[in-house]
Structure formats: C-alpha cells, structure tokens
Length: 334
Image (cartoon, rainbow, N blue to C red; front, top):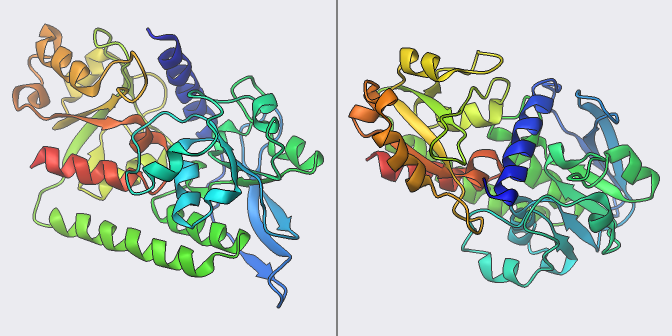
C-alpha cells in the first residue's frame, strides 16, 4: 500500500471510530455587538484523549487574517466566501478539486499533501485554525486540540458538518457561521442559496426512482475487500439518502466480514477513489478488481454492474463538495 494512502486510510478509520462516540448536538448560535465585533460562535471541543465533542464558545474580537485550513474542502469553502487573502496555509491538499476555485486554491501555501501536525500548522503563525473536527488532535497527524490551541491564543473553528450528529444540513450552518466570523454574511447567504438549489435539483432528478440498498467498501488495495459500516456517520448516510440509497450496514457496529457482505447482498456497491493522490489506486481499478473477484460473483451489484466510485473527499470531506460527488454518482447510475 502506498505510504500516503496508508496514512490516510489509517487515520480515516481512526477518525470514524472517534466520531462514533461524539455528541449529536449541532445547534449553533451567535451574537454580535452592533458594530460587528466581537462575534461569538457556539462551537466544539474535545478533551485530550477523549472521544465526545462538547460545546465551547469561541469569541472573535476581530476578523481573522491568517487562517490555516486543515483540509482542502475547508479551504475551498473559505475561497467561496472571498477569503483567499486570509488563508495562510492549507494541509491535506489531496482530493478532487472544486474547479470553480481551483485557480485560487493552487495559489495558496501548500502545507502538505497529507494530514499536517501541530508544528506545521503553527509554522505560518495562524490566528485561526479551521476545518475538520477529527484533525483537532495532538497526535502527529493532528493540528492540535481545540483547548491547546486556544490556550496559545489561536482561535479555532470545528466544522459542524464533521462531528457526530451532522447531516448535510450542517453544511449550511458552517457557511453561515463562517460568514459571521469573517463579516461575509452576504457572500455566505449567496453561496448557501447556490448549494441549496443544487441539492434540490439532485433530489428532483431521482424523485421517480425506487430506494436501493448499498454498502461502502473502503479499499486502497483492489485485492482486499474491506467493508466500512459507517455506523454513527450521519453525514455520510444522510448524503446517500439524498439519492434514495440506504446504507445496509448503518446500524452495525464493529467489522463487517466479506461473508456478511455477500450474504446481505445490497443492490449497489460504493467504493472510494484515491486517484487524486499520487501513485494511488483509482476507483476504476477497484471496480475492475471487484468484477473479477470470483467470491463476489453471486452478488447482484456485481452481476448488474452497479459498482460506483466516489472521490474520498466527496465521501469524507464533510463539506459542500460532497454534493458534487452525489451529482457525479447520479450520472454514473443513469
């Protein structure tokens, strides 16, 4: 397995396990003085070594000017609100590009094509670290815990879409909160409306289709069938409900064996696409291997050629970009 992919796969599974124990709260509020600042956002923290997210208010006395985004999807959201000049650096720059902001993204400071550590995140002297919740950790792959960063005077924003209990609706709350933090309320409202129009169009496009079951295979090696149940991954599961796909293993904890997959026999199989990472396996390579796997030959998804690939960041980037993945999936399925 490619070293970079191995790190990403390992961390992804660790993040899944951590998020499964999180809180389901997702209500966010803010208050501002009449002059605009300070702005207080109800956000989240997690204790060192802990698993549960708890509410923590974050107060911004002024607009952040040096932001580290801990993933590509987090940075792309900032770009859509016109905040390029405020982004000091981006970590985990792998994943499918949002072509509408790709030029601007390519001009940002790249802090690493994998998950970045706290030292790297702090190397650009940020006043805000922003992004995916599972990466706010003091491990080598984490940018530091919320509390440790706050103690150093660095503000934090954990994307609500990336903690347990989140659904696709959480994306709209993140857009709104980001607009408040950076005094970009009008831009946030406009962008949220664009995403909602696309979401409604996707739902309309499948209104006459029947619901189908699916299973997700988290495979970076085409020869090894690995099923991820996505239990307690509401954002992931809600995303597929948008197009009438129901995760057949969503209520199953622990590992799902290859034998259980075959016996359960879902209508559709979804696989991750890692091709945006150099020297990594593509979704099509995984699909081809599954179709040739004699153990799976009896499955209806294999016989009916209903195996589809979706980019990793669309699956687990926890952002508006996931809608692009769903739009592309609908095209594949039709």
